[in-house]
Length: 337
Image (tube, rainbow, N blue to C red; front, side):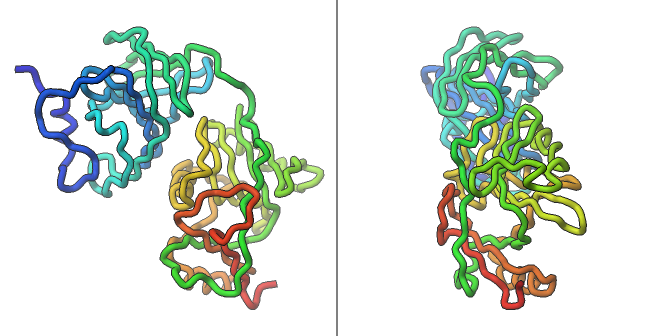
């Protein structure tokens, strides 16, 4: 009797300890072999899981840099165990210590067409909202495969800002009462700026939508290397350009777009977790610290350090470009200047 295709999947998971679907052994369901899902996986290292429906399971690869956007690069794709078809709709938090522990979010899902499927080459066409086009997967060494885009991308160049403006906070005299519903950040001042990363370059847009230049923003040239950060993926970040200890630093506190994905509708908590996983840390840029539910402690530290204000952001808040919203609150300190 042939082995169940999900035996390896089940052997790595305890149905009583993971929210993931763990179906009982039995014949695999029948389908049309045309469903795909890409999941953003916040495990030990951020990566994306590509899953293609085939013969009653989702054949799966872990892709550290997501799908390539054009025909130039090949991206590593690590072949993993087959997953059940129910995984195509799964989102949730896999407990720390469990296999694959971390947040799992659906990045994209839709249908695909198979052009070729052999042990040496898989050619397919994706039809999703974020991911579309012709791709090929091919093995290189054991579980290591590569994925290559075969057709031209729908558009090239730096990702457009599309009229994006920074989300703004309302001023409040006191922190919110339900502090457990908020994340808290230090307001270090400086120049508010969106950073648009792509093709190894970085350009900056001010709060008024006007591009920043070294002439208008001293020290901006120190941030040029940011374009090669975030593993080289296109991205739109939100932050402030500040001088700290005589060094110009871009303090990053949000990620609005990443690769082909618009993250505006995600919660602040999930956007911050994605940002933290991108490892954007250098002498001239770093994520601002954030502290879920710990407003009083943050206010005390801010007062001791002479920081003028603290920001309180609802953990469940979307990003509302250009809006001044009660989802975000700015609480000045009485001793602040």
